[in-house]
Image (tube, rainbow, N blue to C red; front, side):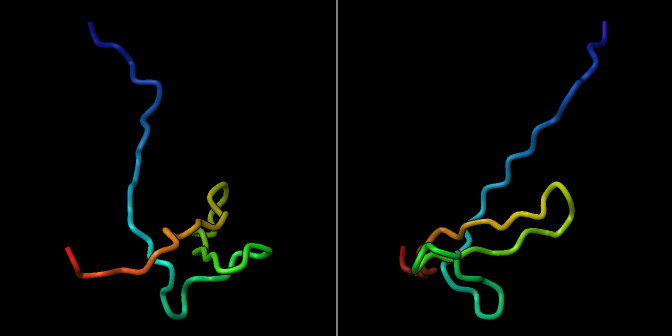
Length: 59
């Protein structure tokens, strides 16, 4: 017997570096922290904090 699916949850894990020229923004009242703008589509119009670290090719 088939059971209906009531919801599906997606988890996206991504590295967002501290600074992406022309894209990252300063977090108001949080000196030195950065964020990226959300997609602008409700309810996802918030901003997202970056990882607060730079990208490195070192392993």
